[in-house]
Length: 117
Image 1 (cartoon, rainbow, N blue to C red):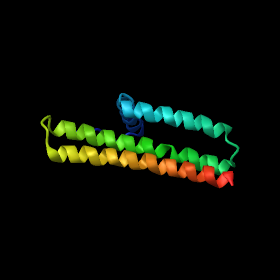
Image 2: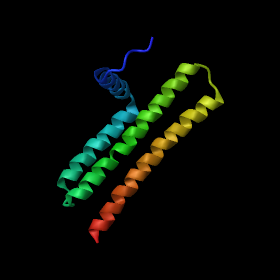
Image 3: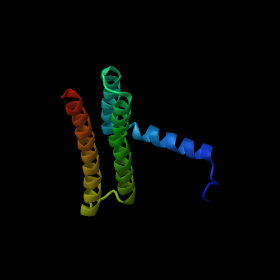
Image 4: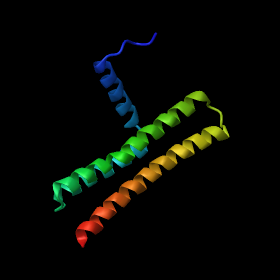
């Protein structure tokens, strides 16, 4: 039976998801980059609006990794045997993470170039 809606329970479910996600090596590496670039933001002499925008961009790969891990878990649940469609699903999700990292890097490089000249 489906549990009754509860804001508290939904929060606890999301924390369970964070705990599960934190076991993933890729997520751990992305969190190190997140923390490093958050620290970099504190020392950059950029206006507040740009720091807010750059900080927000750091969440894009984290969100993509959450979706990627979710897709991988569901694919693993559906079958333990190798299937080419399962491989495609995992590869496409991983590509989404890669694109999100490239997107974030382009944003950061754009701001660096903009404020350098």
